[in-house]
Length: 370
Image 1 (tube, rainbow, N blue to C red):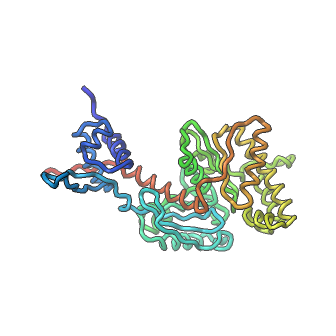
Image 2 (spheres, one colour):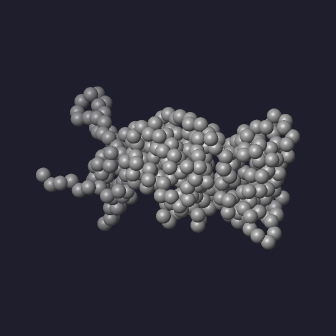
Image 3 (cartoon, rainbow, N blue to C red):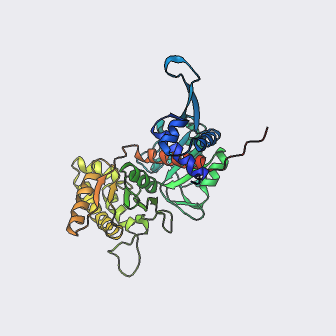
């Protein structure tokens, strides 16, 4: 006798089939290989979760009882996202499929965030509330989220070991996830490229901050700090006798061209012919290439993906490809396929996937006997 699958596994199989196309219960049984009674019970569970609805479909010829077709209802759920890791601060609204329904821009991180963490929290709440009520929100930040206690340390937000997730959740009245921007982009790029769990990926965010997200075994690798590949924790190889962060060396290159500036600003000046900016970008690329080469040698990723920064990403890609080739390392080097709103969309899709998984796996309340 064949043992029926666990209810959670059955829900996942039926829901995966519904992602391909709506169907009647017999059609879903045929597509999934589950028995019709199992599919009937599973559809009832999915209805209780709010993930599906029933549609009466008239039979051919208009005679007989219509067949009830089951379909997903991603429009029933809302995820809002806030991205602080790009050149400009953006927020957006998404459905359960991760489809962006709208977005807004809110200025620049280096001008709209301050050294006052309380004021920054107020700004974050205001930007999230502008997108309306949600079932879940995701905030993509420059900084490290400790994987053990979920506290955030972020220089742009002037926060150290702060329970920002819990604080925003309490203020808004619905769950909020806070995650490192490079981690979210790495996770999104890994999915977009269709890689398998055996194919690691490294993603470099370097428009405003400079951070590396990693996907290992199909999961974001958080490491000890929550941002496993952050350049902030890499050593400057030119220093002797004491440890100094590579991030400071990289920023010195950029600030020699634009005091207090970022990669996107320096790259734009270099493209316009500014000689100081060109020298700064060459030195920046050389040092960052050395670090990325070491990361690639250690992880052997299928792909190293670079954030799509106009005038900056192509030059870094060629420098890194050349370095990896000289060392006989086979990792592909790509410019991000995620688009100019990739950071925001990564947060939105991550939230939609998290919410969908929560709905699929949460215990189903038993129906009270009549």
